[in-house]
Length: 188
Length: 188
DNA sequence: CACACTCATGTCAGCGTCTGACATCACTAC
DNA sequence: GTAGTGATGTCAGACGCTGACATGAGTGTG
Image (cartoon, rainbow over all chains, first blue to last red; front, side, top):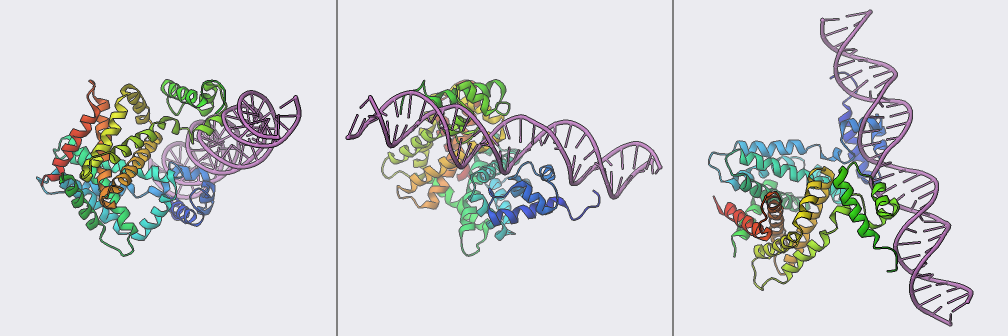
């Protein structure tokens, strides 16, 4: 805490999004982002572990949301409902900034190395949800299976929600998709 | 097709596995791998897109296995059973070389960037299975949801199978895990 | 047999990511 | 004021990865 200009981290994030959108992720160098934010390349790497990470700032909050939803779910909830609450809460958070989410996703979809990072974040989310579910007394294996299925639904629903021309309710899409998967797994 | 020594690609793969195991993935440079295989660094990059890819040679065959299983499943199979057949076939393939799979997984577990690549391969598998399932008449959304859940189970089951001291039947672990998820999703 | 062709590989130069070590400079606390 | 703390700059360098071009063995064709 001290007294420079408006915070460097925010300026770097802003600069990165703008430049990535303008010329594409690969065509933008870290040095350019740093210059555009008025700092040096070295400073960029003090705020972000790597060039990709700047696009994944929100993931910690997303996980927090999901975990808290599990913790505050009604006593006696079934494991799958704990997971459902988690991913719906995460969906509600993303929904607050749909256009931002859409633009960001377009960048990710255009670059495999960004997709890898995104998948890693989703795996982290899944593991966090599994832990939270297990903390509520569900056996670890069951918690892992349920969390895996839930985050998988979360991702598929995200793609549908983002691709849709009209804005639908993302948590509702998640809920519907979860229900559809339930029916699929019950059949046969 | 021509006539050098035993193929360079194989020697590179072998050298990479050995060196990664000896000193760890990050502590090994591509140049060292190349030297150890009797070629230059440039040649390494002619066979593998990057330093990580050398650890993911088998993924194409794995996907082939899964897709073929979907294609050859009995007519009228439920979507979830198509997916089940796919991941059990993939499991059967990995089972042929359990110790290799275990050693390889130890490397991956020790390095986040390798985990990212693995997640990407799993996503590729999931998408391929979804396509194959959709090609059998299942609506795309349902195919995606089922494939996502199935590959998620496949991964969780893999971790259990690898962690276990005694060797169990991997396809059976997959089948059991799938069944357990079904029950979890039916509850409540 | 000479020639052209292909294809794996080597050589070389260079860009960009990321890191460690150390200096600087403002602001804070005592 | 003097020492400490924390954000930043500067510098040097390792390493991953790529494009361009050269080489040299093997293959075919006239």
